[in-house]
Image (cartoon, rainbow, N blue to C red; front, side, top):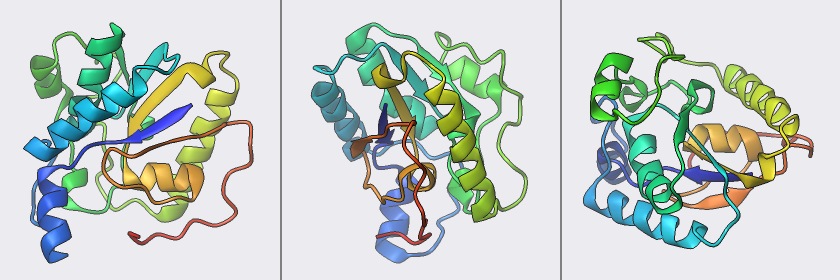
Amino acid sequence: MILLRHGQSEFNLHFTATKVDPGIEDPRLTPLGEEQARRAADELAGEDIRRIVASPYTRALQTAAPLAERLGLPVLIAPVVRERYALSCDVGSPISRLAADWPSHDFTAVEEVWWPQREEPAEDVIARANGFRQEMALREDWAHTVVVSHWGFILAMTGQSVGNCQWLRCDPNTPPPAEVVWRHG
């Protein structure tokens, strides 16, 4: 599968500059983030993608949109691939609001409040990533799936820190990383 981190968000822009949580809940992409998402769609258009899975955070949905449009595929919403809940940007939007903003997506299987209400311990994110890895390994189409996710989840899946709109391949049949280091690289 291909793991694609969302494009630059308003939160990323401010946090990168100051290292202070700017208090932006469920941030949208910046204009640069939107351009990054379009470039990622261009890069991935040549891959044999048959399925797009995305986190319900707005930044992930915005990142998935150009690829979904280009390939004519629906976006499957999966809270399991969400970011580690630790900062203001990890407070999501209620499903009723997301459904109004993204009427072509099916949010019916997602709870109204789908993000945790307390900081998520690293071991919980790693367990969530390992569960997703196992689930994907059982799917015949795993090699044709793009997962639009976040820094922390991709780190838990691969042990690698990726920048905004970077992507990498992940074989769910390989062992998870032996160690996950939780700091931005």
